[in-house]
Amino acid sequence: MAQSDIQCRVRELDHLVLTVSSIPETVRFYTQVLGMRGQQFEVADGSKRWALRFGQSKINLHQKGREFDPKAANPGTGTADLCFLTDAPIEDWVKHLTIHGIKIEDGPVARSGATGPITSLYLRDPDRNLIEVSVPAL
Image (tube, rainbow, N blue to C red; front, side, top):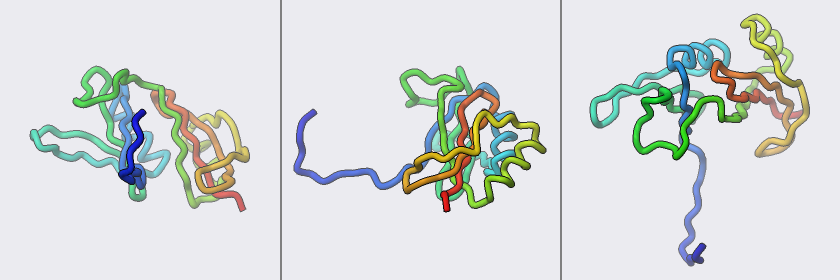
C-alpha cells in the first residue's frame, strides 16, 4: 500500500448493515429484547428501508436476496458478531432475557472492550448472529 503525507483517519462508526432473513422478525427482536428503536426511512430514489437506532448509531437492515447497492461482496445472514454496551446491571439482563425466552450462550464473563474491561453476556438474534451485551467492569 502506498504511503501518504495526508493525515486522514476515521472518527467513529456511523452505521453498519445486517443482511437478515426477515426484517419484521429482526425489528421485533432488536426492539423488544435489546430496546432499540425501529425506524423506516425513505432514500433518494423514494424506496423505503428499515434501520435500528440506538445511542448515536444505527444498523441498516437489508433483506437477504434483495440487498441494496452498493452492498458487501458476500452478504449473508448469521455472519455478524456484535457487542453492545448497556447501563443496566448484567443481572437485570439475565432476568430480562429469561423473560423473553432468549438462551444465554455464555456469561456473565469478563472480557476486554474498546475502552477497558467489560462484563458480557452472549446470545443469538433470529439469524444466529452472535450478540454480546456488556457493561463496563467496576
